[in-house]
Structure formats: C-alpha cells, structure tokens
Image (tube, rainbow, N blue to C red; front, top):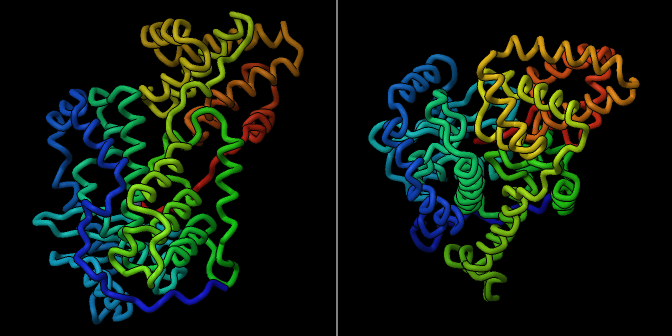
Length: 431
Ligand SMILES: [Zn+2]
C-alpha cells in the first residue's frame, strides 16, 4: 500500500498559473501563434463555436448529475478544497456522468465559468486525494487558458479546407502534450503528493481499483521499453504524454523549487531548480516528438511498391479524408514521388476505381508470388495502416479486403495486425 499523503495545506502564496506553466508549452504557443497558417486558422474559424458549448451543457443537465451540496456533500467538499487551494473566484459546474471508464474533461462557459465532467468510473475508483489531482488537472486547463488554443480541433478539422501543414500539426500535438504536464502541475498542487498522482496514473493506465495496486515505484520502466520498441510514428499523434512520462514529470515537480515556493521544503533545499524541473520534463516529452529519421523506407520491386501505395491510399482514405499527417507518413514509407503520383491518380478516378485496381493487381500478384511473399506484402500494408500509431476498425476491414484480393485467408489479416509491435486499444484518459 502507498504511504498516506501528508495533510492538505493551503499554498504559502497565490498560485500564478503562468509561473507554474511548463516553459516548453509557452515556447511552442509563441512559435505557433507566429505562423501565418495558424493565424489564418483562427480568422477562418473565429477560434471555435460558443453555441456548441452551450449545447454540451444542456446535454450534461439532461444526461448526468450536477454536483451540489445536497446531491453529493462528498464531491461538493472536494471541489470546495480545490477552489480554496487554487484561489478560484469564478463559477465551476461539476457533473458526474455514468460510465465505467475513467474519463474527465473540462470546457469553458461564457463569462469565465468552467464546466467539468467526470465519469462515475473515476469517482468510484479514485481516493479523495486522487480525485483532488483529477479536479485540479481539469480546472488547471481552464486557469492556464488552454481552451483558447484548441489543438485537437486544429489537427483534426471538420472542414478539409482548414487542414494545417504536417509540421504545424506535429507542433500542435507537442504543445498539447506539454499543456497536459502544466495541467498535471495544477493537479499536483491540489493533491500535494507525487505518490498520489502516481496512483491516479496507475488507475488510468489499468482501469483497476486500489485493492490490486501498489505504489508503482517501478512504473517508469514501462516507458523505457515503449521508447525502445515503438514503431515509426507511434506517439506522434497522441495529444497526451504516456502515463509513465507524466509520473516522472510529477516527481521532478514535487522535488523542485516550484514545490518549496508553495509548500516549503522542510529545511532542506529543493532537489531541482525551476529550470531543472522544466528541463527534466522537456527531456521526457522529447521522446514523443517527431523524428523523421526513424521512418524506414519500404524496399520492394517497383510493381509491388505501387500495389502497396495503392493499398496505403485505400486505408488512409478509409475514414473519409486524407490528412496531411497521414500523407506525410505514407510518403515517408513509399517515397514522395510515388505517393504524389498515386495521390493524383486516386483523386482523378475515385476510391472505387482504386479498389478495382487493387483487386486486379492483387489477383495478378497472387498468381506470380508464393503465398509467404503475398503475406509479407500484407504485413507491410499493416505497417502502413499503423504508421500513425494505431489501426482503427475501418483499417482492419480494409486490410481484410486486401488479404482477400491477394487470395489470402482473411484470418491472415488479423495475424499481420497482431505481428505489429505495440498495437493500441481503447484507453482510459482524462482530457
Ligand atoms: Zn488534460
């Protein structure tokens, strides 16, 4: 069992979110706001839509429970604690939505108010202190002004015309991951223990409750292995750092001058200065950043490369659009000239013609090649599907169809996907 967290204290001085903010987040935001394409994005979209937020609030009012003193004295008191610690004057509406997974998100309402939604799965599994961490994290996003910079919507716009260039998307996601660390810091100031935050991350990572979990001192090793084994592109499209990175950043923060400024250091000087705590977090986050050198170009005869590229297009277009991120990765794998040529052809003839071409070429390849060679092509197709870090349902279906075109039994599609290193499934996450 984890040791009991020290008694909850009020910080010695008012918490200034701008001071707590991770330096990398501020740096990335400055650089992104300086890019003309980002400025145009804000002009075109007017920075988001207020009516959507109010519709969301109505959905919460009708479909979940708003926490008040009468409805849940327990949660109401925890929210009160967070308000005191973070010195919040504005209105915060807390809702609990019925769902067994551990989820939470926060969004701004007009006049500076915040709307916070937490799943019942989180309430049921989190201890009081862990819940303070979660509340502080979510409210922290609001106090840090993260909603003025909707990275997720910018990377995945509803309208194709608003698609930003690949490099900008990568910076936006790097900003998003850094902003999560800043929000974690606000959560840490509320729960006041890196051990408590670690337990919250163990629960997020596993969905388990207390009776199955220890203190998680050796949780970091999981990240080391992920960094060692990940395939090209994995982590790049994640809006959140992996849990074990967040644990290490939490520890560095709790042993730093940031902490001693708010809570004292009990006589001994803090282990890390403000700059050192930030540098430690930057080093962790860097493991998730874009590194183009790790895409390995596929190597097959021309005819096979064309087949792979066609298959790649079919897969990345499976969700209805081809983002600049997906196209970038495909170009990395098959070469820019080929990717461009196939893209132009696909745009001209449409997806159905692409699928007919794949069926014809697949049939020819199945006659020319031995079955293990056909399977090897299918494995490469799975690599293409996974290059953005995950294989979704539409992509699985696509790989099964291509297996059939190559006259392979459809269960081999599942084998090809299973053979990929690090396929990702459904995850617990707080936004
Ligand atoms: Zn968050």
